[in-house]
Image (cartoon, rainbow, N blue to C red):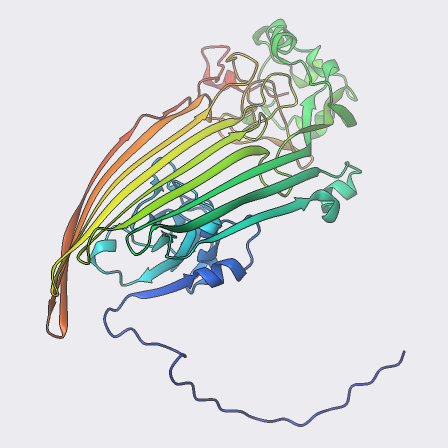
Length: 483
């Protein structure tokens, strides 16, 4: 069909917006954005994560400036005013909700538990004095004099997604995933006008596999090395059964050996390493492998997750109100999500159990004097255990960075072989106790607020950094197995 569009006439409309339009904050200089419960339900979110709404406010960008400590994932995963994401303070019902070890969100909660979402980006008032980047505060729902509830199921499957470019170019099978996110909420009166309840439970079931392409040492090349290297590969270098060779890169001395000053031709077979002059040209050097492993293929890490929020509000009198809220996050991330390997026994997962409890009492002594007291207990327990293989000596081409060849990382046996310096097991409990008091005094046309916060933190997490590092000779240079 031959369709034509006709030119129209131009017009200008000037619209003056009064009430309901732009509102000027005449009480404080704080720059903030509030997202209410209706917007929370209507705005798009991929994983129904309420903290993702921080990207909808002004002065926000995804992650932190390049190279900054605390990149995407820190704070709420958002950088405010160009500062590090880790500079954001995360609050839940006005109390601290930070994982102080990693600078991330402490306790996640379901989207259906959020009544209001507030993001402060500049000129914070005194009670938010800790943050330098931004403040993200989630307020949970409470029951009312009428019963309200919800039931939901959200599903995402790989059958409705497309293949990525790399898989198509290298004839790698399409990754498979299924994400089911379901739950329900209910709130209402226990005693009308006096006592109310709200509860929300949510379950995530993610099943996901991804094909991992890596480079590994060819057995023919290893066979030319010294006995120490051969013994190492014999004991720790059993390839997983679902790994298959896609292609092989032959040894080419003119490209690989660039001089002893770079450590590529300095070792001999007496120390367990090969030199260029002992390897015939054309010897199989690196094999490109593909293997399937539980991993994020587009729907999140494969896991079972349970989220629970329960809250009770009590109007003790017209001058005193009390509420208590409990939140639980329990996650079991499958082996292979934290680290995986082409070699048997080195896939690792993660177990998380978070508990968060807050008790708040607000009392009005008179029309001009009001005080609020809050007590918070937050316990975050994160554990990343070993895989089926015991702790074993690690082997690295370079003790500082991942080595790539042909655009793919070169993997050696051992835990976390692509991230030198990292180590497992990792984890332990983090306990955070907070007492918060806020006074408000109305003086005519002015309001005076003052108060304080006492925070107690005890972090018992351990980190096995450099635990598997293997140094086969007294010389530091010998820690690199280079052809």
